[in-house]
Amino acid sequence: MKPENLLNQLSDLEDSLNNFSFEELTATEAKRLKTSFDSFKEQLETKIFGPEPESTFSEETKNGNPSNIEESEALVSEPIVTDPENGKIDLNPALEDCMGDISVLRELIRLYHQNALEFIGKVKIGLEQEDLTEIRNAAHKIKCGLAMMHTHRLHFIVEQMHNNCRTTRDIEHLHRLYECFVKRYLVVAKAMQTEMKRLETS
Amino acid sequence: MINKTILLAEDDELLASLLLYRLEKAGHKVTLVYDGKQVKSSLAEGMPDIIVSDIMMPYFSGIELIDYVRNELNSMVPIIIISSAGNEENVLSAFELGANDFIAKPVSPSELLVRVNRELQKA
Image (cartoon, rainbow over all chains, first blue to last red; front, top):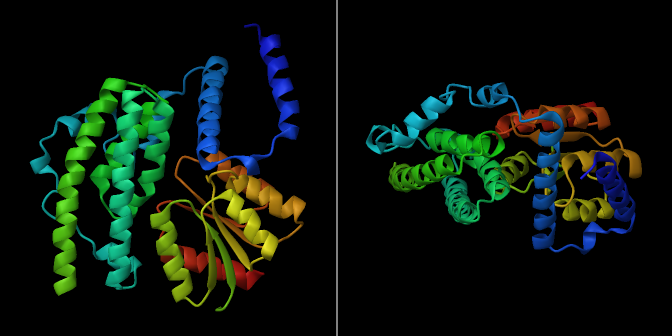
């Protein structure tokens, strides 16, 4: 397609937006529209400006986390038994955020698990359909909660998935990161349960 | 600084629950909404003393929200934006459109409370 044709089509689209009311959209339609728009925007930007520079990727993975692909690979292949989050989870910082109210912490943990399971489901479907936008959105959504509950390894894996969707777009590596997330999440969930019991009885 | 009304717009339920708890515990009256449609409905019912909003929300982004409040509703109500790291461009746009402050995710509830009270004192 020639640039002027694309510009004309975009201009027509812009005109027709005047008659469009987002309030009539259902949540599913809005999500599909947003996904489709994100994908178009990304493709157009890549065509015009080229792929995003590698430096963005490195910049986003600092803050004490492994900062390059080799380290990301190392994390995936690392035996889970060496993970510091395996045997122990420290929920004290989260409990402090809840001002010591254990019932609030319990609710946060319920939401944490709900988000994690939702993430696992979405990424599974995203991987099956090779829908990187869906995976990227799911990763973006869960990141904050993982960081809030101080599950840093899980947060790091999700950060890698998010970056992968934006930069290298390597489906195979995404599969490995996903499997790594699921395995580690199960261990973290168990450790969290143990820590909650300890806090409730202390 | 108690009994102020806060509109909290955040689609992450986990973060929203924690912030709601802390803000209410501090004595504020908080209306929690999860998307842009609910933001508009809530604003139609009345203007809060302060708005705290995520930058990325379904239907209506935090950026659109600032534009809507400042230019369509002509209100100077303080607005604090919540944003993920790596979203600096959007944060700059938010400030250009009239956001008063921003806080990065993961949000510390105590820090947000300080920022909310500071903006309320200024207003």
